Image 1: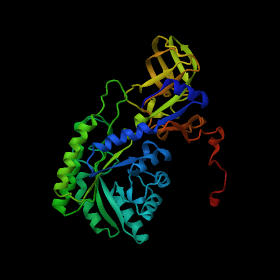
Image 2 (image 1 turned 180 degrees about the vertical axis):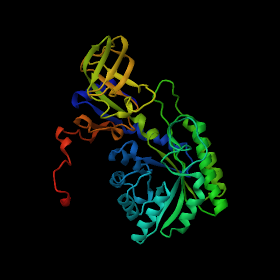
Image 3 (image 1 turned 120 degrees about the vertical axis):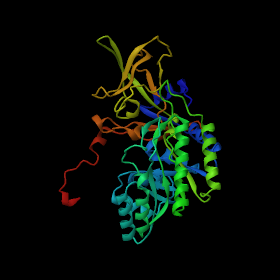
Image 4 (image 1 turned 45 degrees about the vertical axis):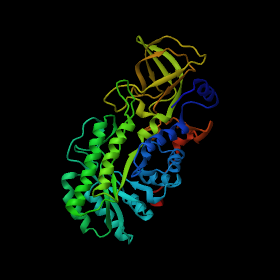
Length: 422
């Protein structure tokens, strides 16, 4: 995302910080390049968990993407963004009955089932509703895939059904009269920057689908290849060369289409790769202070809005890419310092021991690569600070796509009522 400092400084004089700023034109150009390199047999699905702003989702809907949801809230938001049921899939290891009921009533494309118990529950609900529900089975592969920042397959995980249990799964589906097998889904992890790992997962997923066809005569209408395309956040990380990566994926898919998967739709889910580089999180320096020989810049935003950029829960203590704007346009010398937020916890750290100018109060500090897993990933109730504004820049104009919260929002949905009245 290109950042014009003069323009951003003018914006911070009109709008109270902290806020998120997204570049809609960059976002769509970024996707269009991806689409140009991708075989027509592959459909992209937006993972709403990465950013749940309805107006961001609507941009992707207008480009023809499908949507992957993982809650009743996301299912509702997807509908408001214009995604019809026939291009909506529902995943997640712990779906509640009312969520499954809503998905089945809406007749969405398919429910990604992740346990034998879930298959039984979907069958029961569909029977009660006198219908048949389409399901795709998320498979936890037997083989281990290396070099995934967050591994979600190939090891013991709550996600998916072990590949070794496929016969048991198929037997259960065959006995279940109100579910229809629609395909498979393999998702080994997120934030993958090694192309061989991604290609290996895609190849294994296609092999599984072909095996189901050859050995069991089962047709996969959908082969969900997962995704997990990573974005470099830290200095040692290198970006994926997407045209080369997609060339390899295209070859696997084309070969599969020539084989036993001629009628299948291939899906790639993405959230982080589609969104991350299109957004920044903008804060303002409140205080510049020293403590026992160390300097701290205290800013007005932090973990409550952008937990992914802080050190909370991260084993590797690296810093997201950061930028700054001095209110007078100066470039002070850099030194080692930490950039911290307003919360009462040492986890609220946006930058630890960074080489950064000792900026005065009123300066702007922004966090790059913040378009994905920003506000949607953050503990917004902690300490009761208001939620930030979200702004979309599109065609040279700025649009408020989420109004800032208010102090009284902390009281929302708090009540004192007899249980029987609920």
